[in-house]
Length: 439
Image 1: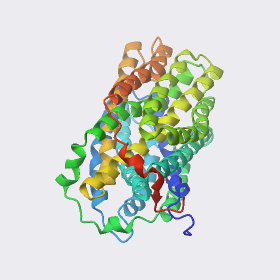
Image 2: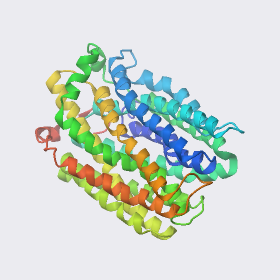
Image 3: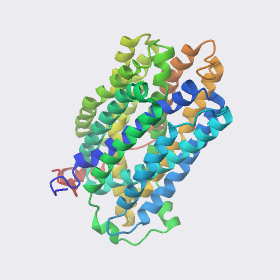
Image 4: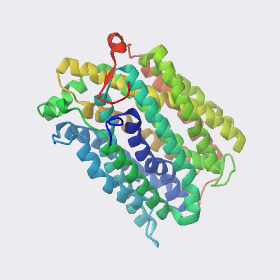
């Protein structure tokens, strides 16, 4: 890989593209696959998802701590990323390759083991990948650019996965679809890894002790308020992805193949919108843009309630795309500022721990999504695809719009307790630097 592309925002974004292909297929279709296609009861699915969500939250800080302590000639993050590639491929294939003739209990056990393994490996990749951004790119503007390019690639990957998943399933089945996506992931992830060169100074720092590594993070008030607010908005991302296939089937009355159009409406529209939000960040700064993004996101889920067919669903999806784009672009900018201020205070870079603890906070709120899915389903009688209950339309109308709106209102209220801690960082806004070729 030539120096021209080494650590460029485009090559960094390629890592997001690689990871989002299997992640999007997983988050959008794994619940639908097990409950509506395979017939696993919603009770079993809910139990498995609760275990998965708790494990998802707990293992984040550990992944960040061990990543920050790693010292090799290749860097702190790259060895973890390389080792995780084949393991993620195998675990992703396992999720969608259920052996035939399984009982409901057996399928539950397979479901639980598969998603826990997939999540554990995915955590290693996400934590190490996320820790690279504040290390490679210094300053709000270059971070906003990296975030915008990254999210542009993310949406392209989501679009690729959304468009290809159901046609592949219809032609070659869920299991073979997972093999194709696993191969695409490996190709692009290894390409990304080959283009990254970590900061050699960070490798020279003494290893951080466990208590020392987390103590300053746990005392950082701005960090906690910011991430708790984000956690409710992040829950909406997962809830929307998991609910869209059900919403299309039971509310809009469309076929499985037409669900692709709904996913495309949301994620195609996000691509230009992320650059609109990049412009907004340049005008308003990271803090005000982040607050605005959550408000816009809350407003954007309202049209989903009133959709009744494919056309109105597509229009509502585009509205959601604008709100989602803002929430995708703005948080990394503030996270980078928090890490910079911590480095100035302690003299040590702890990107992995900060990214991981932030992930712990946001992932913990995933329990809300799981419980909401179960409670709303129980209220309206949805059990599985074989027993959808008397009113599946109401089930998924509430889950696609009312519940996300409530969660985002909570995020807005919490954000009001966070003062603008970025004012000091703006002094250096005109002196942005990076370890890459982007200027």
